[in-house]
Each structure stands twice: as structure tokens, then as C-alpha cells.
Length: 261
Image (cartoon, rainbow, N blue to C red; front, side):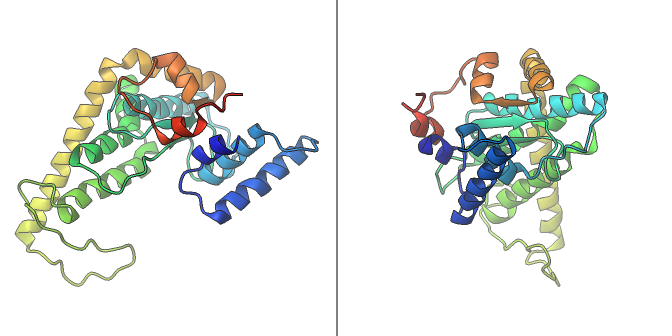
């Protein structure tokens, strides 16, 4: 059990682990149990990762359907992108500030290629692309996704020198709250950076849109199962979509190997 729970909590600090244990004890107590079971730890991890479940926030059927297809778009896009992080869990239960969430297992690495970063951008745009494909419209649900994608695009161009047009240069990006008196580059370079960022995001969205269009039936299968169960784990995804079409052995699989008993 310890190995599996460790795999489900990547990047947790000691304080996070303590919070999980305390929350798991509270969950077990609510059920009137004298001992804590694995499901209680998993529910506690969900709370620490996704925030407090909003039981009073009841979505309208149409909104719930939109959230299900949005999250299914993220899950399916990541499933068929080689460099996307392995999916651990996807949920349409409102938690924290979100109406749904997906939890991934980041690879333990410190260097990223341009291809890996682009796949992450595509996975992040999966929700917006899915809404466009199935409903012919988009919603405000992708706000956080778009913020992340914009940050990733600008980081590649401004910090990592991954734009052929801007070149092998690196500028410090201002942090939130910093007062920026002047940019460390000219207005002409600023316009070029903006154009490159828009092009990168647009190309990533087009790629994601085509990927999900080709896998439209798979997105629908995942969305319908989400509407039925509200929470899906990796085993559910394998059942619906088959194994990921890439040879990989993630940290999660290494950790839980031989722990099925």
C-alpha cells in the first residue's frame, strides 16, 4: 500500500503527507470505522490535490456534460501524446476552484525537449478542443488551461531559446507582482515574441483538435463513463482505450508493480 500511495502523491512535502494522514483518519471516522483503509488515503489525496469537494455546488445537467467532455478531452489527448505525463485520475466532482480535474504523474526529470513541452501544451488544450468538437462552442472552463499554455509558450520563446525566429536568447520573465519599468528587449522583438507565442499556441491547438477528431469515439466513451461514475483511474482508461501506444514504464508502474495483492 505504501508504494502505491507514494506513487499517487508525487512532489508531496512532509506537511502534505501529514495532511493526507490526518484527512484519511477523519474520513474513516465519518464512516464509523476503527481503522484507516486504502480508499480513505486515496480520498484524502484527492482532497489535498484538488481541494475540498463542493457538495453544495450542484451543476446543471448541461454544465456537467460540458465538464465531462472537457476533462475527457484532456485525458484522451494525453493518452495519445507520447511525451504527456501518465494519467492517474480524472474527475468531474467540483473541488477547490475547479469543476473537474485530472491528476498526472510527472516524470522524474530535470531537462525537457521542445517536443516534450509541445506535447504538454497540446494535452492542456485538450479540454478546449473537445468543447469545440462536440458542442461547436467554447466556455470559460478553459481559463486556467489557457493561462498555463500561454506561460509555457512564452517560456519556450523568451527563456529557453526554442524559437527559430527569436533565436538562442534568454530574458528574465517578470514574476507576478514585479514592477516592470522596461523590457530587456526592443519593441520590435516584443512584437516578434508575441507573434511567435500566438503561432505556437495556435499550432498546438490545431494539432490537438485533429488528434481528438480522429479519436472522437474514444473521447465520447470516456465522457459517458465520467458522467456515469464521476471519477476514473488509470485502470478505467486502459479498459476504455487499451494500453497507451507508447513503450513506457512510469514511476507509478514501477512503484505499484507487485502490489496488486
